[in-house]
Amino acid sequence: MRLTDESIKRRRRPTKGQLLLWDDLVSGFGVRLTPTKTSFVVQWRETSSRKPRESLRPHWPALSVARARELARTRLGEVVAIKDSAGGVALRVAIRRWYERQTEIGSWRPRYRSKVDSIISTYFEGLDNPRVKLTAAAKLAITELSQKPVSSVTRSDVMRVINAIKPGIAEQVMAIGSSFYNTMLEQGVECLNPYRNRLRVTGGRSVRSRALTEAEFLTLWRALEAEGDPALGAFAMLAYTGCRRREITQLHWSEVDLEAATITLPPERRKTGKKDPEPFVINLHPTAVEILRRQPVLEGNAHVFWGRRDKKPFDFHFAVMQRLHALKIPDWRLHDIRRFVRSGMARLGVTQVVAELCLGHSAKSGLVAVYDQHAYTEEKLAAWLKWGDHLTRLVGGRL
Image (cartoon, rainbow, N blue to C red; front, side, top):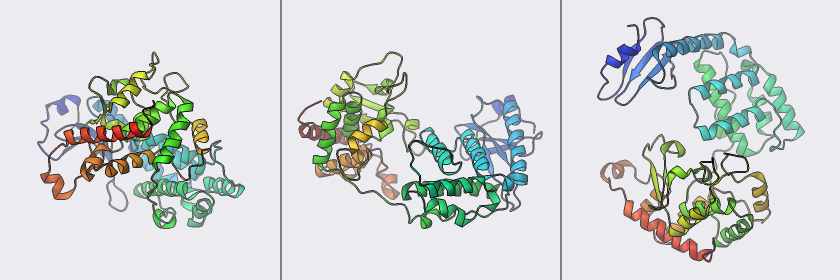
């Protein structure tokens, strides 16, 4: 059938599962209907008989059939071009094209997109990054690797780079490189994946267990008191809520209800938003409410904690972190505050299920998730208040 906006509008949605309708004008272009949404897809056949399928953004009706058909033609043309010539393109060029395509189809959450971009520019394209210090050997290895054709990159080329940079960033470089080469293989480029088995190469993913002591936490708190707003305010909210850094530094006033003493985070602002599409409600301790009431409001800026540039959110920028690291607290990160909150709740007798739910984790799995449908709303409120009382006593009631 020839797809049109009208034919899609008339088509009844399935009550479960999905319904795929293919266009007669462009082979491989179709529309996918589910009980809740309608999206366009493009599909092609590989030499291995696999049929990769990609979704086009945005969903219908924001994206019309005519426009989606044009995007599908463009994408199918890219697939043929990649298959025919990508193996001979320099790695730095090919991986940048791949990044732009993955960005277009929404492969990464916005908060990670800039991070991937930075890693590609520094460790695949060899561009200077003032915040990354590389040895001469690392720079040479990256430069030589970036200029090699995709199909000519070997494992030894990759390992020259990996062995010359820090283990933590090396794991991320391996992950991005492996994902890129997997895409090339799916699109019919004849090449091996020199980044394969990335966890085995880098020794596996290390799980941090660093927990700040109360004395270390107080040292940081007192140092941030000298910094003032917004540094202290953002740090205090991390400590009172147990939220992730950007959930607080990018907090909008529209997400705050001071009268109800709550913060409501939409799914798109949470790490687990795709798995848990419901808004996440955080109950605020009275001290936390007072911190927010005292936070200056910048006209024209929607963020609670605003940065040094107009309309930009505050982040714990390099200068602040340098002063905090000068305190000589060993091996600490801002994310350790979240572990400090979770461990503190456990010491205060908060049950594991409730403490995990306060952090926005999935605390129920298997049959427990099937049969326990209790929301634990009152229990979470009690836990946040109990933790807030303890934290207020710890810092001496100083804001």
